[in-house]
Length: 406
Image (cartoon, rainbow, N blue to C red; front, top):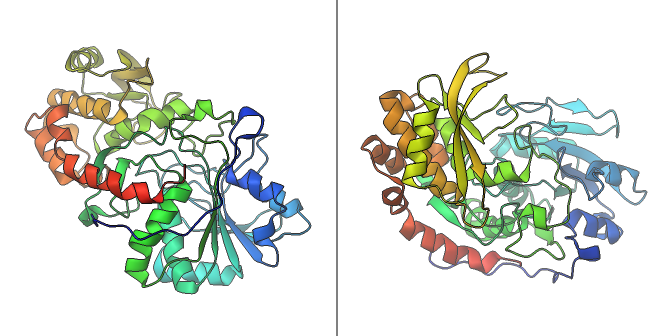
């Protein structure tokens, strides 16, 4: 981790929230008459959650604004309309509502991404997507890859800020080992990074984009008004719109940094149920024994109970699973990553060597650290695991301070 960060560009100071709620970057752009967009052929990276307080899409607003020339739409994972499951996006198509071309940029990088941006004919790119605050949620890496492309093309990029729904104070978990870089983590940031998308854009630009491309992306941002670092999404006065099919509530986002690690195991994370990432289970474990063991080990701010459930989607479709429900009872004391490590430790003990998905590579990419899996195989508990990343986490906490806006 670099010891010293480059000085980021200045930004417009934040204002007090309107009517007791947070005003997001999109709303400030609109209230300002779309001034940064005037004279440009505008492309927007957006999805189903790119909405205002009334759930009106930014794409609809840009299309209806007489002063804005909306040229193209770019869809991340799940697609612009959010119709696809994890790992997929919607194909290139013409949007029937706006007449604009919708381009699939999920996992696109390098020349492939640059060619799409050039083909679209845009002269300015806007990013307006709700993140969840976890390193392996892929939208921030679509932003990262687009920043690389914008730097090389000299294409202006405008990032419209939105809240980190699980607060901007708590920073925890392993920092990605660059040797494990993938689309669930391109750069060494903490698993729970505690930053907004605009703050991440500033960090990416100064610390990684310039290093890899030799220049920074022409970046501008519009920050929020009224957001405070200690806020959870429920405190913002905004309306939650699921940014992906299995992120139905802000509570899901809160547990996600810990329970999504089970995507690298042979267990179900509750996809295809009404409780994704709150239900975990397997056909090979006794959920009651697991819940009791994890409770005894200590999971602050939670109540764990055993549940039986059946998933409606592969790879567990129509399979009866036994596991546990991770219910958050005290948001203030709940630590999703510490809880996740306890659930992993106790689950690994019960499941044995068959606990891991495949070779374990998926888990390593999600956690960002190969030593975690090794220690879990040796029976390590959560406190010993946390010691693995303490030094790197302290460095990341210091680094991020330079780029915070609020």
